[in-house]
Amino acid sequence: MNINPIFWPTTFRISASVWRKAIPRRAMAAIYLSWKFLLRLANSSIVLAALLVSTLGSASAAGDIRRETKSEIDVANINDGYFSARSISKNPKRLKLITSYVKPSGTKVEYRYDLNGDGAWETYSLQSGNGEYAITIFENTNGSKYTPIQAITINVKYSRKNAPFLIPAQNVNYDASSNAVKKADELSKNASTDLKKVENIYKYIVETIKYDTGKAKKVAAGELTGYLPKIDDTLETSKGICFDYSSLFAAMLRSQDIPAKLIMGYAAVSSKPTYHAWNEVYTEETGWIKIRSEVQFKGKNWERMDSTFASSNTNGAKTKFISEDKFYTKEKEY
Image (cartoon, rainbow, N blue to C red):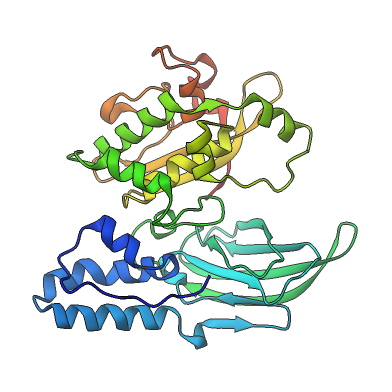
């Protein structure tokens, strides 16, 4: 994920959508922190340009990359809720990345990911809170055995509220050129509040994207190990599984600067709980929207974001098996 040169327009009175197109994704979160402050502070476009370019340079500073023989980790943006990692050269062996965090209560939280071996940067969230994280990259040695090839510790202090849920990451992967972002811009253009933007995007997804039973069967059969959503493919084909729905929804909301979580866990759709994905969303009007009984949007009373079940239920009927919190068990949030 290389930082490309930026050619600023002659005026800095630009819209949010143009700004997103001008800035590389890895630098976007860092620049955003300066943006609102600078708009209040600087009337001079020269001052604004100088400060923004300075911010961009610091985001890619060589001292922010921790290198080992086979991999490297970019920690320039950890206070914005994410870091990036890659194998330094193409590696035919399977790679794993684990983040570990200990909550104030003493509970250890681990997130396990695949890391591609083709040398491309991937972005990962630091979603467990402020404090110390351990990041370890492992290389497969034989069968299910792995050996660590890089390990670092970092201290995180979020630069803004809900920072990890406002940026692209491996499971919610998008950039300014994504068609999903353009569609989110279109759906949000005339919305007067964030809550209205959420409603518009939600309605679009549940009315447009159909459940892909064929892909679901492949996942159940173990044919799609390590599957990651491609949000523009979901948009183009108008179909997907729960992971696709939730990743698309989170990406579209984050592109509008609305914090959104992709939740992974279990839904009690039968006597045997099924692994499932859904969303939680934050707006200033509501705070974090939590679990309730309905899958359809009901203004400020809408408290579950489950676009998968809603898309199978667009006639407005309630879905009985998600009528209580106990039917959903959160395991991970991204």
